[in-house]
Image 1 (cartoon, helix red, strand yellow):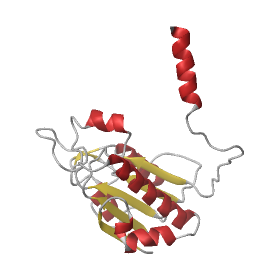
Image 2: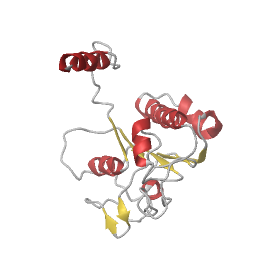
Image 3: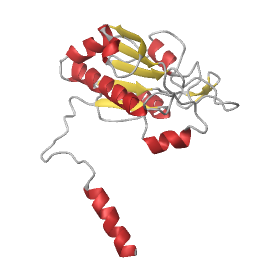
Image 4: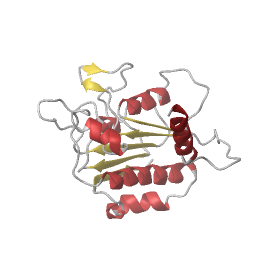
Length: 209
C-alpha cells in the first residue's frame, strides 16, 4: 500500500508544470509581489526595512493588508497615512478586492479599511496603478481548495474564481511587461478599456510619472 501511494505521488508530481530547460533569472528586472500580509512584506522589503543586496524594478501588492486596524498595524509599520509618502521610485501596482473589507457574519474582514489596498495605493508615488476587483473577496484568487477553506471565515464573491485568477494574473503580466520589458500595449488596454478583463474592474487608475 505504501509503495502504491508513493508511486501515485511520484506520478502526480511528474505531471506538475516545470520551467523549460536553460531558463536563467534576470536580476536586472526583478519584480517583488505578495498577497495579503505578504503584500505588506513585499512593500516593507522594497522600502528597505530588511537588508538585501537585490534591487527591485517594481512592486505588486495583491490585496495587501498592513494589520488589523489603523491602531494595530503589522511590524514594521509602513503606512503613514500621508499621500504619496512611500519612498519608492519604482513602479507600483495595487490590486484590491471589493469584498475584502466586508464582515463575514460576526467575523471581522481580512482586509479592513484603513490598512488595505486603498491606503497602499494612496501612499504610492507615480508611476502607480490601481485595480479593484469589486465583486470578489480577499482569498478569491487562490486555489479552489483554499477558497473553500477560507470561505467559512472570509467573505467570498459569487463569481467564477477561475476568472478571478485569470484577471489577477493578466494584470500582473501586463504590468510587468510594461515596466520590465517596455511593452505597454496590454496594460494600456486594461487601463483604457477595463472591460477587456475577465472580471469587473472598477475603478482602474493609472497615475503616470
